[in-house]
Image (cartoon, rainbow, N blue to C red):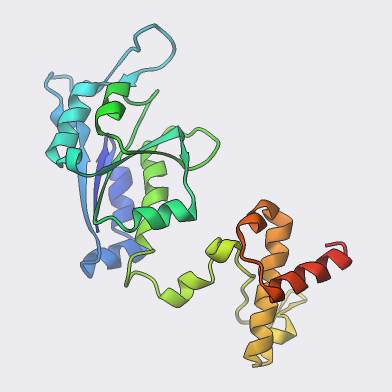
Length: 241
């Protein structure tokens, strides 16, 4: 997969691209990246990328001309273009899986009050929100989406790890423990030390259900509830959990 990322602040993006699992994925050729500085496509000597909004109001708006030239430089008209905005569609695990099927994605990072609407109308295929709140950096939002997508690509992370994560099959993830077996009087659950993989698997499923019921009960509406899950839900209901 290739990511083309259009931004006024490349340093925010580049720090992430050159660290941890992303850096290794790039070194292995699983991912390629292109970071485009939008200011390089400004014609005036002051490198102006924003202006006051028509109709008045607070803040500034990113100008259409430099943004369109930057998008044209990566042939965005022929690609899936993602614009990060609080007014976009919610970013979910399912959305990440959909984006991961693409061979190339273009990310447009907004700033200030956002981008001239004509850019969105002409180029953008996906308006995405990472949550019901506002942040100042489209770069940070873009990195959230990029991180959620690239880790799903073949070879980046083991399929076994992906299979038991939160939101897989609609449930949140179970708790994890490692050495030491006791920390500040808190012991690792005995079942995890038992070596009984069947019981460990059932314990983990139960904990996934418990956490989902407690933190995100609405997710249960998306779960394919088999007999085992139904029995656990009934047990929790009887205990008032």
